Amino acid sequence: MMDTARQRLQEADGLAAVLDAAYAAFEGMLSVIHPAQDPASGLFAALVMAAASAADGRDALALAPSLPRHPLLAAPAEQQPWAGGPPERVAEVVAGLSRLVAERLTQAAASAPDTGDRDACRHATQSARDICGLLSTGP
Image (tube, rainbow, N blue to C red; front, side):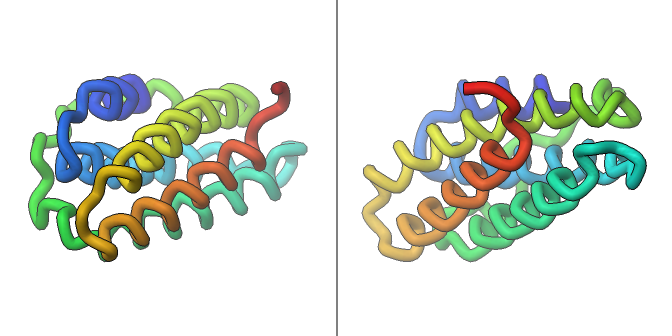
């Protein structure tokens, strides 16, 4: 799921496609963060806060006027390779994806003609940066 989300973001062309791919990426983050939230893990609080930021980013994009009302690509039926993985690995993968989401949404905001799209992109970009900050362990 995370590899598919990354590929969709990298290949997204045009505002609607970037918004759609970023929305799906936030959904994907939530689907792998929740199973990794182990209270015994030192990453528990960071993962809970990252999940809240992922939901916030997804919700911000839901308000973007140019977000397609139906997904542009049907989600493929695939195994979730990170679900149930160690919290450290989930954090690493989600942080990497959040960096890409922030990058693509920053680009989209710069070229979006509609104020609503720019605002949604900026809000969701901040959510992605928050996730990265919460889950990144290195530079």
